[in-house]
Image (tube, rainbow, N blue to C red):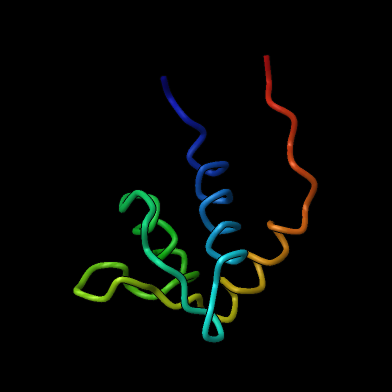
Length: 77
């Protein structure tokens, strides 16, 4: 099954925003290809390395909160 990459990135970013702590820090428990894409877009700090968390950039934090506040999209049949 193929997934819509943009929807997946938006979902992961929204979850990072919902579960952020310590002023923008979030656990990096999501797929690394998605996390890499969010990093390349300047929305989070580099997910590679020994830390168990990433930091949402100011732009990433704003976008994450905006996405998380949106109503849940309906699934397509």
